[in-house]
Length: 336
Ligand SMILES: NC(=O)c1ccc[n+]([C@@H]2O[C@H](COP(=O)([O-])OP(=O)(O)OC[C@H]3O[C@@H](n4cnc5c(N)ncnc54)[C@H](OP(=O)(O)O)[C@@H]3O)[C@@H](O)[C@H]2O)c1
Image 1 (cartoon, rainbow, N blue to C red):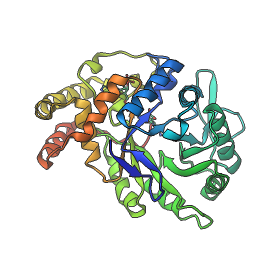
Image 2: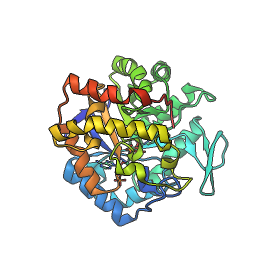
Image 3: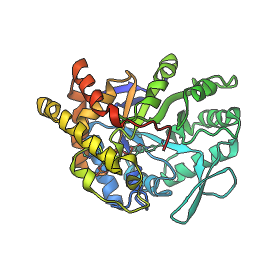
Image 4: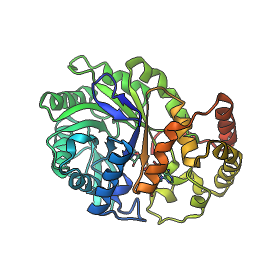
């Protein structure tokens, strides 16, 4: 495993991070509802493969992902770097309507009190008295950035969090957060944004600003929720509520384009003795030198495959071949 510091902090995180949206189950990841035993096995596998960076969010399974992680972390909390999020909550205390799902109404609220309540709620669900990193889940223009930063900085002073980051944001948001004068810590040390070989534009817009602040760029959706893992995946059908029934690759013309790309990529998989997942993960790692590869995994088998991407080296020509294969079907996605 490779490690890097989160921004300018002394927090050392593995380059591959475990994403636990799927662990939350519910109607968005409707093919599997995980149990405490599953979460324990997943963290055991993380220890086996050297992954110490775990990402979750209050809304993943509306508390379920955090609760399962809390149980699985018992007795080994300090061996992991735990990252969760603030801003989206279902307390019905105001903020902007975000979505209704599984009987809950989720609002986006980045005001001082909401940020502080979110962290208290997450600590309770995960049975921990500190969280290493808090990501503002959806940066929101309707509330002052100064207020959000004050909440996060106070949480650092109180020893409840160690650093923070942004998600579903724009490069100018990073400048704005870094520009808050009352800041005491170094501020944002990681941005978590959607980025894959099929949707690379938003990330590319972001890298320069990240570089300026030495910020880690954490990519989510690098496997397009499974669509970049295999041809077989394209034949799966999902419930209407499931995130995977709503992404562009279920459309016939896009599916055909992606299958053509798999044909072009196949010889590279043979040459490097690797999976399609590894190929696109390695591609992502070549795009920015402070890249954090956040991959959603619910099984040890997928994790053991994922970590091998760190040993692959792609030449400039191979990278060009991979990118050319998908040019016709690339999509502009700001956030999901
Ligand atoms: N900030 C945000 O708004 C935001 C949005 C979306 C996601 N995220 C975060 O990013 C994480 C990753 O995104 P994601 O989970 O949506 O999608 P993803 O990482 O693109 O794809 C996850 C899917 O790929 C499968 N997979 C992973 N490695 C594989 C491998 N080597 N071979 C075959 N299949 C493999 C997983 O299978 P198994 O589950 O069967 O192991 C899972 O079904 C989330 O879990 C979450 O932590 C953040």
